[in-house]
Length: 457
Image (cartoon, rainbow, N blue to C red; front, side):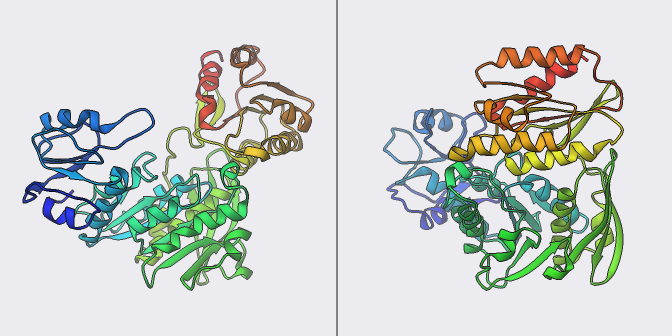
């Protein structure tokens, strides 16, 4: 972060301050464990903590001023605000306005992180690029990401997540992107938003902060994205169907255990590409990344070359090979759409091997949960998997969809589920060349099932 004057900060947030503000701020911090000399400490308030309780700890660590929503007794200037989280967002928005940095904002129901990482790789062939770290994509994480920027960066690639309407609106007004990317509109968080139409509405809030003259990059093959109101912004479509006006398309897609080969067509010029990831959906993610590169002057071949050795983040469809058995670890999260993609990946991964799935409940589906889990069971049955293990409260609905070759249990029966996985691993059924998909929402802790599987093969 570049140095700011506290006197400038207070001009850009809703606050009151009676103390002197002619102070240099070297960094902004919300965690006393990492607070250091010269920091501005912001006392965030959460369900299980109150940063106001740690103000003096922050001061002892070197904080030169604090932002609070209630009076505190301390030795440094106190900036009083109605809401400390809002103040963090206002400070981030102001700070970003002081920088000469282009911003690419990425959202969507599925594939945000993969697409963000691919965009970063493509753009780094030509520029100094900052990319969102870990899952810092919400109303606290994104401002923190912005405050990590400095003059050494040309472009910031910022991921935007949401659970409810209005959240991306907040994020995009902070980031003010030059280029916005929406990967797809799925059913993740449909229990909170009520319909895919509302999910689409929430994602398109990203346009509220898009700069005048900005561009939005969309997948033309997604009916919600294709049919949505673009608010007059320039739209660049990517996809697999040229008849829908896609400026960048892919064809000749062929997946194997090593990855996916394809040919990209841009303005009639065709370039062969490869990514060490399975599935058409990853090619779609890559097309959006390649277009972002084109937008900033990166040649198509250079963009494609930059991802030939791409490795996904842990538990996001990365593959571990244990005693010749390929295990697709895709349990960072799950939704009807990402589960479908995971099963399609499993189906095409190695045609000669047996196929199994360890599946956990898809959370945050609300009233749609039973129906979506029945459909998931039907999808497993249609793929003719050799065996499925499912755990979740809608296990009966899943079993209705897949009445054979499935072991199902309630989420409360975790010990039973893990014991069945252990028996399966020890049985000798799995042999070299077989493939297992481990998939589930984060709250289902499917990493435990993975550990039991690999420790007993």
